[in-house]
Length: 246
Figure 1 (cartoon, rainbow, N blue to C red):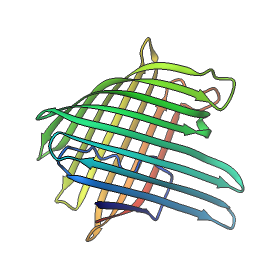
Figure 2: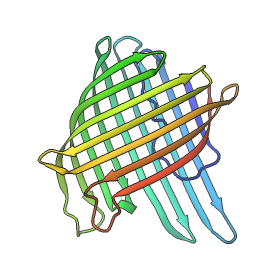
Figure 3: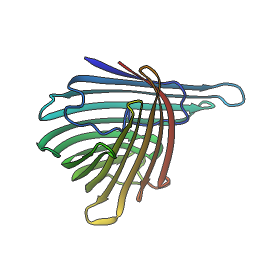
């Protein structure tokens, strides 16, 4: 089994996913994995601690399908007061239908105390189209839908059972095998209420530093048009990390 260990040595903020780069059947045959973790501690005029850790495991049969699962958590305190507490779990199966057409299914569970989400559970699937243009990079379009269950940490917001559409665009481009640019954007409108939607954007640049050591810059922007009461609609985060591959 080949492993990818992500060492997040210098963190500006916390990012939920181990990697946003889209995966393709046959790119990494067999078993592979990823571990990530970070610790950001300040003492003196500011006392704060932030922790994040995650694991990602995948299997690619190199012909017709691949599957992967990921778990992450983040926790932080400032002057003894908790300011970060979230978890994220995702399982996905991708099966090739034709040369550039796949179907995929997924299950996801997440929580975030500071958006008042006790549990957000998703299950769904759809189709993914892959446009392989070596000169300009790899572009993916996905469309489908999912069931969403939401429960909140407060009694002000009722539990929700929703059906949402799921549309996404993913892109990756390698530059001379020593750097890679990746981008993914999701649009998830609620069926029956077009004003209730979620938008997610993530951009990552990985640059080779030495042999198998990379530095990664990530930016994440999310918008929930109808979040829990008292919670802001927009979240922005950025992270800098070092990545060691072997």
